[in-house]
Image (cartoon, rainbow, N blue to C red; front, side):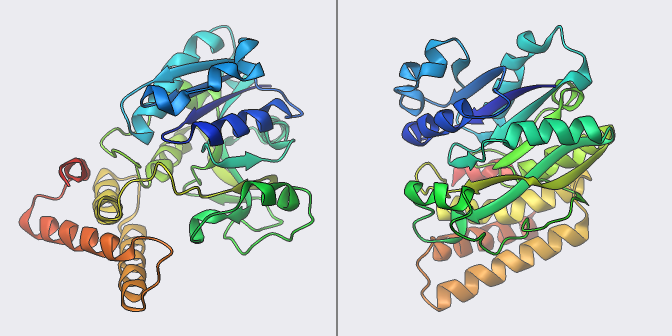
Length: 305
């Protein structure tokens, strides 16, 4: 099975360069890698990477949005897979600050070959810097991957493969049949919060999506390139409601997700936690609630904030 990789990046050309180093060391080498930035600075210097010089990397630009950039990558991938059968290849999506273990792609390919109903998968995140103030330092990544440091608590910390409803967008892979027939919803703009859940849920038309813990990696959680706290807080309300109305997220999951995030933002604002812009997120939550009451709630309104 051939493996392809798509990376959507914004404001992290240096991090993306290092990710290409990790992809160059995969035991199953990617047949091609597509990096999609939103402006020239996003891909600056990547043309000097050895993989790019060898023709193994395509560098593209698209409108700034995780969904739009990933769709541009999928469209650009099609000429590379025209001659392949849908079950003979997979595409992996990695965040630019994700660091996959050397056998990530090989393990994903093996899982899909052994489990014919597997349409998509996500792996075990050994450490997730998105929960910390400064993220996981680059120098600490090899310690997690090499087992020197024990995995941090995380919902993906499991020894058992299990079926899911959605996948974690920092590291996920899908069969070719999914990549040919599914696109990310561009009504979820900017950071595209929950776009991974939506895409994976629609991929379930082609089989199951699952956690495959043998696919290991570290999500550094770099702070550069992220959207503002207010915008993110708005999306924390607007996006789940949009997906519930659309039918790719249950209302129970949506309400639980919104309540959990609003409560967390409120408590961390009151206690002065400074890991993230929790006051901004709370203001975004409240603005979205007002829009919900007035009938104006729409994920695209985050562009007006």
